[in-house]
Length: 226
Image (cartoon, rainbow, N blue to C red; front, side, top):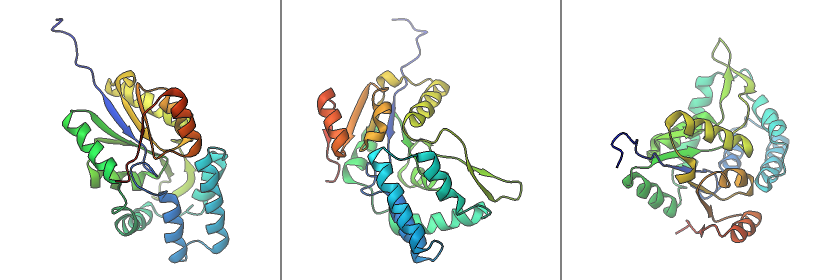
């Protein structure tokens, strides 16, 4: 055995919406913002349309995300963090699926690097990391001006589709992680590219398109709802 060989570093990547938690957090957040009168009925319905197209993997995600984030242009980052903390504690913290929690604990015991990888906000992903004990999170990042306010812009690529894969690859290169030995858990066909770039992909309560793709490729299909 070569004593100079470095141990293989393995990561377990977890998608968030409808994978780690049992619902799309974007829907809950839109409902939360509507209840608090920060968005109107038209904006709420538009959000539902974007979320539907997003889940089907057919949305112009950059355009939809730009329009959604534009609603918060000029809002202080501290205010957005405070809003997100209230939302998280009220609507998200109880939504983790039993199978997700068991699987996360398994990877911790195995010494794997547990990574939350999500198209959600940097504020929500940070709260999820702290609540459930992930080692790292990869999420979207928002541009902040010199006054500490959101500009309405975000760093590209979004953590979605091939953009999610690119972010995971960059992270793996930095941390010395082998994607060929790593795990990825997701529910959505929009993550197909990422699934094809890890060694151990798992479909979790998958949407119909991902279920078909997983069966064709003989990827494991798991139910984390119990």
